[in-house]
Image 1 (spheres, helix red, strand yellow):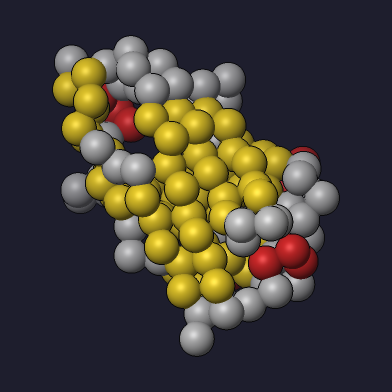
Image 2: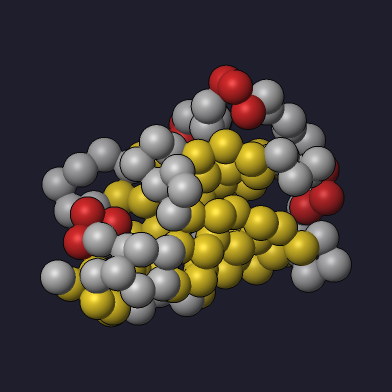
Length: 128
């Protein structure tokens, strides 16, 4: 059974940091392409960051330089370090997996519709 479980969401002040975690099971994590997405109320789901099995990564322009995605194959987990948070970062954050997939970083984040597995999300609220 495939599972992706996000954690680490919280309510914080602008300018602070959070680290989100995504623990996975039930598929070949080491060969999977993993992405973080977010969705704010009334807005479409948007890709935030994604990482290949070889640790190459890509980011949305809105988070470049502030967010860092990483993965730990020993723990089948992916992380999203979020620094210098702003109220515009407030959203439900989801991790998603596409097994046996690799995407060139120049191609941007894989569209949400192309991911196979999703977690339930963790909420981030940033107040000014």
